[in-house]
Length: 139
View: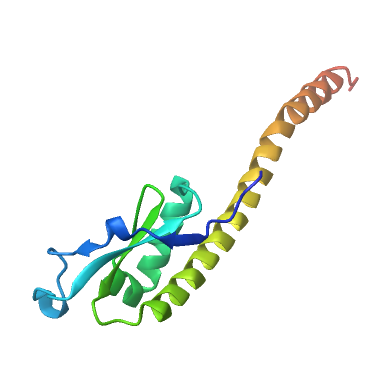
């Protein structure tokens, strides 16, 4: 299976907006919360998106602070207006690299499973032949 790694190719400035619904500590409104959009090299497949969400669940600090989600070919994360965006971008690039690694690994497992399924008819034929031979054995 061919897989082209997903990368950040830019910032979608049109999708950067104030996040009116984001809650900070103790569910108090967070005045400086913004949605920040990274343009991705391609629209991620649903399995890749699920891996991102699983990563976010495991890394609670990232998920609670960033609330990552994919919209079309953009990865949207929450930011504080005064935050160091370069530092954030470097962190997000590492996360995307890890998701790509997990995706590639799971694709290899899927390919192996498909290969096994494709071999199954041969096994069934061999089983049928073995049963036919077993029926001819004189006891």
